Image (cartoon, rainbow, N blue to C red; front, side):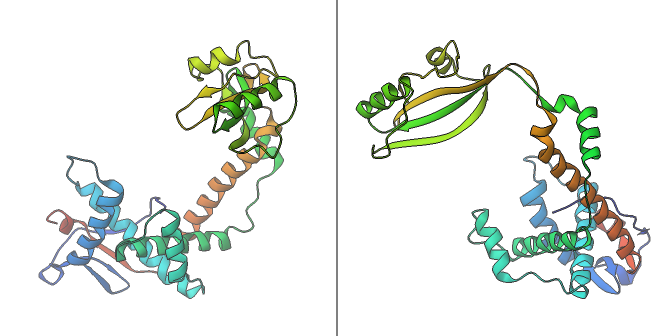
Length: 280
């Protein structure tokens, strides 16, 4: 779900005919009952803070977001963009949710619609190498790293096999593929300061090629090998280039989405009765 400010004309007067209506969108009435259902879903799933009651600002934020979602659904349909029930279920299962409420399913559907709209209207967005270089220079502290070592992690089921693997690695040899109960992980960089004391003792003095004796970790024996090291400093531009590109692309696409929605909003008649929210 995305959040950004929109310009809305707030109607602060009420009449008898509007007593159960909190907003109107192109003549469609959003009743107090409908808003309560939407708000309860958002408050429980997103905004809930134990012991805090919802404020008028909380209610306004949910109402604005709900109105935006209705506009987006309508516009997406006009653009020929749809999201199937199967796609909604797939996203929910990815999150580990098997029995979602109808409200949650609709919230996920709207989020997927926004993503598809953004892909269409933002397909021409680009980030140049010069923009990446400038961002890197102006935000270099983001790319600072402390003293680090790159470790290869191996987990072995039995003590006997673990010491066999340890001796092989000490002699600079590889691990035979036929050994059972041996799981070789990927090489990863670790901050030297953040490593547990026991691990630091086993791989001291942190020379490349150092292999730790097997460490019992409850589910097996852990063996670590130092495969690289680097002193504190700044990650080079080439190493973070794609990370910066994705960050700048996301920011540019969000700005495109904001501009697009401001234009879409001009085609809709919107009335909001904020005073009615106080009593809900």
